[in-house]
Image (cartoon, rainbow, N blue to C red):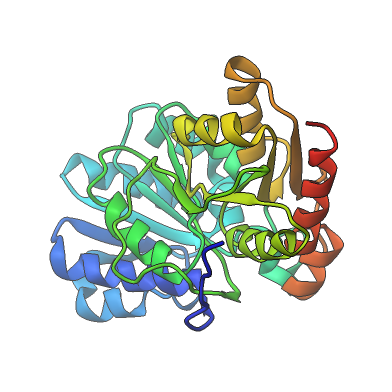
Length: 317
């Protein structure tokens, strides 16, 4: 299998900050709004270079969404920044009514998603956000896997017309994709070719899927690994092409199995190509306080869990 190298761990939220700063230099219509979490969202460089294009809204997330919607009317491209929990659950009505319903060109940028928020605990660890956002008509949902891909995604969504939900995280994770990559919304990336099983992963679970594939190779199992950074619109063609070859699939995500990537793929397969599938995701539960490593292990969101799911789904072919 193809080997990938961790070029140095970095947090995906810093990838967002770097991409936003680059947009500040290249696109005069990009503006940024934050709900009192500048440091957490790594927005300092954008603000330093473009103070007149930044709006500190304070702890008033619903107000932030309304202001962002209004800014689009004048041709601005607003990027909102706060934690994923506050970017979705707290302001869902405002997003639905003021942004999605009228197709406003707002980029909802959400950090600290999933269990890897860690010690802040269940109240801040949203595991339902992908489901909430993908159900909104016209909403694009993106969940990149590392620093480089998050930076590239941040830059790419500025050119996309319409509302976008961009999800990223707090912890430092393996940075293994190309620094000069071209990010294509809605286009899955085949990381490793295989013949026995398809592993489709998103976000922090992509690196774990690659580790699992190496483990499986040592057991004589050939795993195809696909990075689905865009959950909506889903690259159905890539999924179907792979499972036609392998005959079974494992989906992996830092999200509830209800409403997430796995569910979107299950629907695609049910309609077009019924296929045995196993889900690596949280099992309809809230999180708890702990280190990211402890939580990912306890809730079965790592390479060990992916390997176990592969061995199970292979018995169902």
